[in-house]
Image (tube, rainbow over all chains, first blue to last red; front, side):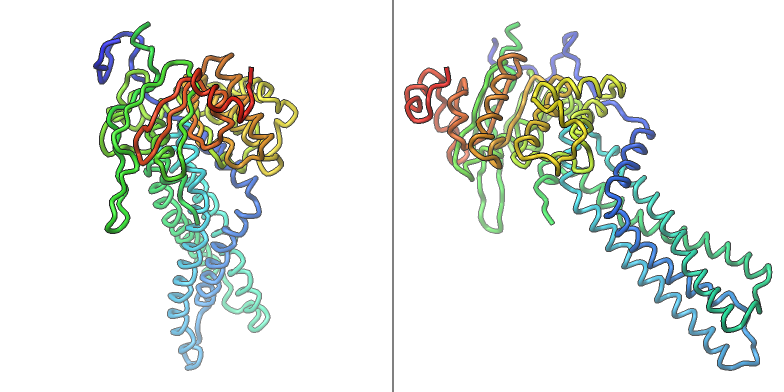
Length: 211
Length: 246
């Protein structure tokens, strides 16, 4: 054997091969299974999203009912709603961030292991993207529904069907879209960057990380 | 083929850790050639640099200087996808803490590397069952890691390391979290795989039971190779202490 070894042998059969990209369906399959098996943990994470959006939706729905402009107290209350909505958004932002960051960092070791087994960085990111997306959309929708239902119930009890015409339901649908979008966006914002960071680390750094 | 006599070669490996003011040379010029089919133990006290060497050989961490050649390919020259291919196909990793994916069953854990390799699902499952049978866990296919003992988890990890027929198995303190008897069984299994499948086993350890089955023992101290012993010499030294194996 010669003393020096070539950097990249170019001889036939010695060609350096690249890892294949896995299809999206494979990531989808593994993500779904992860959520299913980790059901209890996923529920806790999702409830963070759910409650945040429920509060937000509750406040927003209250603002959908028409206000009697002659009633000064009602007008003042309606103005307070704006501030409440901002507060609600903050609360749900922090709640979701916290839940998602925890659920990603506690799996750094898993990310390191997957990389040792030959996972590409973007495949790992895909897993977390799908998981966060699914949880974000589902939990946000349910959260919106919960907040909306409670507000509508309260309204029915105190004021009956007053102000619950087609316009109300139309705006409710819009609110639903806003809630789901906000929820899903915050969820993915909280999950994907740390997952990407972990995927880009040398495996040993991800394996070593402890929480 | 002469060019493939060595499966791993390292040249002048240096790894530096800085902790505040202090500079620690965890590896300080390590040259090591490992032959194909060898069972080699890297021994040394904690903090000697053996885990750092393990990580460098496995491409899990980049050395600051020097190079690692796997099958005559310089690892530093590989891009991310080539490195992933290498980790997937050429090297099998075994860890002290097993590192199984907790949400997956034994079979799914073993099958995962074949998924990353792009093998068809049924082929991967067939391979997984075959390997779990080989390590004596054919009756525990659908158990999760939490439902398995430490020794069983390490067997799953060994099966997983073999999934894509690697030429090298890298084991970092594989018996570190196991009791004496289970540790011996794991060592025995690694030795068996080394003999029967011809896979090169490189193991970082401070378990003296490991010395007994090794073809060569590399002693690391303060980031340098203190000495390399061939099996013939080792038997004399630890023969009475740990008992003959053959």
